[in-house]
Image (cartoon, rainbow, N blue to C red; front, side):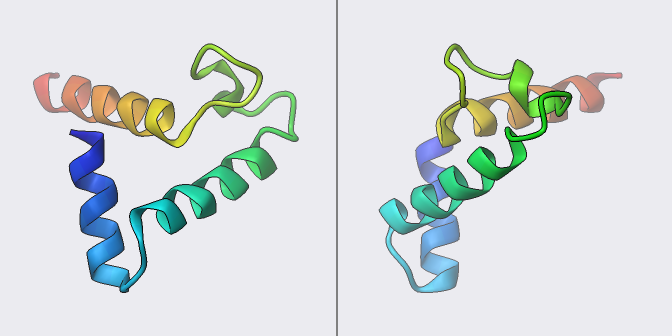
Length: 67
């Protein structure tokens, strides 16, 4: 599912999927600089991957749609 999202964003912006992921990685790393940021609770490592963030977002959307 996340691959489809990355592909869609890439196509809409005329860039590669790798570029989408690199830009997300930069943004995620910046967000993680705040030790109190909720993003720090996502994933298994110190900084979550774009895939981990997207999976988290999709789970949250699914939860809100079922509430």
